[in-house]
Length: 322
Image 1 (cartoon, rainbow, N blue to C red):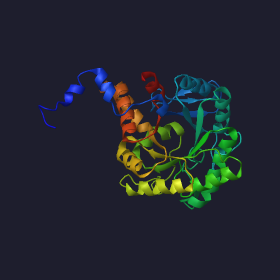
Image 2: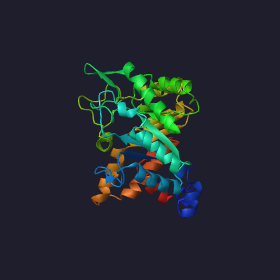
Image 3: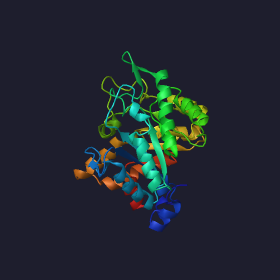
Image 4: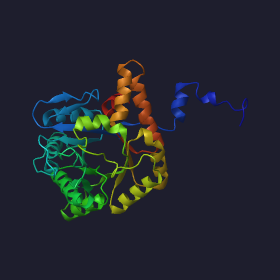
C-alpha cells in the first residue's frame, strides 16, 4: 500500500480512532509498588534521590499500602532496612525482622493486597553484598541456606510471594525446596532471573543503604553486554521452580524483555528501577522535561516490549493517571 491510496494519518486524526486501534494499553493491574520499611513509629522520611518516595515505619507503611489498594494496585514489594547489620545478615531471616513485621502489619490491615517480599542479604550484611563473604570473595553455596531461611521467614510472616534478588546460582531451587518442605508449596517465587550489574541502581542503594563496602557485584550480577546469557539465566530459574521471572533494569533492557517474551511462556515482570525513576523526576524538577509524561511513556514501552507486570516507584502516580 502506497500513498496516496494508503494514508496512515486517517486513523490518527481523531482521539477515538487512536483509542480504538491502540495496540498496547497500560492498566493499574500491571503495577507492583516497591516500598521501604524501617523500624520505629510515625516515620515518613523522604528519600532524597527518589522524589516522592519515603522510608516508612510499619504504621506509615500501612497508610501508603491502603492508598495503593484504593487505587486498585494489586501488589506491593517490600524492602527492609534493619537497625543493625552483621556479617551473616541475620536481620534478613529473624522472626522479628523489619520485613517480617512489615508483612504482618500490611496483611492485617490490607489483607486483599498481594504482598511480595524481596529476598536478599545486602541490606542486612555489614559488607553490603548479596551473599556470604569468605576470604574476600562471595561464597555462592554458603549463601543458599541463608537465602532460603529468609524466604521461609517471609512466608511464615504471611508474604503472598517471595522474590529472590541476590543472583546466587541455585537459589531458586533451594528456596523452592525449603518452602515445599515447610508446608508453603503454594507460595510462588518471582525470581530476579535476569538482573544486570547496572549503574541505574544508584538511588536504590542509597535508599536501602545497601551499597557494597568493597568491590562490586559484577561477579554475580549479569554483564550488560550479554543477551544470550539472559535466556540461560531465565531458563535455569524456571527449571528450578520460578513462577515468574523478572528483568532488571527495564528501560535499558527492553530488547531483553522482548527476546525473553519470545522464548518463554511464564509470566514476566520488569523492574522500572530507581535510576530510571530518578532521572525522569530530576529532569522534571529542572524544568527540562515533563516528568509525568516521560514516566507514562516509559511504563508503556516496558509493557509494549512484553512485560506482564511492572515494578515501579511511579505506581501511585500512574494509577491516578489511568
